[in-house]
Length: 403
Image 1: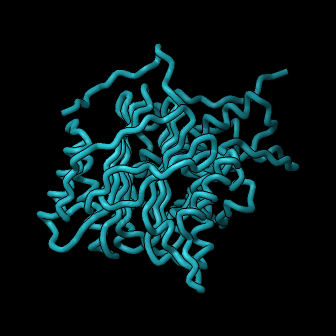
Image 2: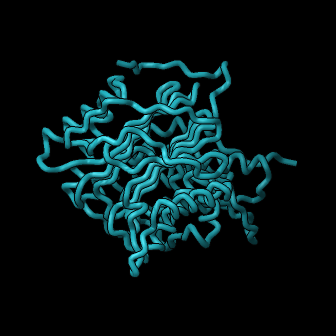
Image 3: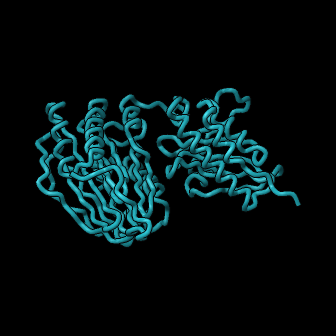
């Protein structure tokens, strides 16, 4: 019995240097042959509702978009696992496409027989697709344009360019974020980074709407990143962000929360500039709002006199959110509220879904409460800590100091 065709990853990766950003799909077809045929690469849109086919305009056959909620492609994206369907000409396989830990789409292909070895190669092809998409996005607008389900405001476009990856996974750590309305978002923004045994997270909400609000959030995130990369402590970062906002903008402010987790000890540090208090989930239950000294917003003499500290337990989840998540109202004036947010968080935690899927379903509930029309940006970020890494894999603190 002859062995099944395989994917030559080494040759495929070697060809990345010479692959035009316009030729992502062609490169995948070359890499997948003769293992797979009829490849279609789908990219998830900014709302994470539909999968858009990536085409270069030369295809004679029109490839339709796929819904996340009602298609096999959507199931592969949501579950993060391959989905199979038997067909007369073979087996159709959909595999999730990841850029490191961020789901960016789905790769569909047809194989003769979907045995374990072939599925392993299909997964590898999906990983290669992620690398190609990630590298191409730095040199072409095609990726960004194809991810758009509809028109996007200038403020939203600026904000998306500012954001980090929506999901970050490391040893026993997950950070995931979601924001709406995806195509009109302005003042909300967040950032995160992992350096050695330290995880940093910040969430900001710029005053107002539109471009002015985006500019406020841009300055806040830019200052935060600069200070973080210089190894500053939370108190110094907090005060410097306040100074930057007050110097550049009159009568404007940004609310926000800065957090830092030591992944070896579980100690969480926190400062709060007029922002909603984060929620703590323990054993899938919301057990507390994480209280800290509530300073005035950034830009209004927001000086940090004290950095709050608390010890997390393995398995804890900390949820950061902007007021748009809880202040939305129905037509009858009923507010969404923190209690309802907590109830939905508990339901999602009990569902066993991955963190990013938890947030996607949660934000859909917020939208439904307001008949699909948010009156303010709504952003949510969660941090899951599964406990310290094993002693032999504790990462060193590299390149980032404390002051």
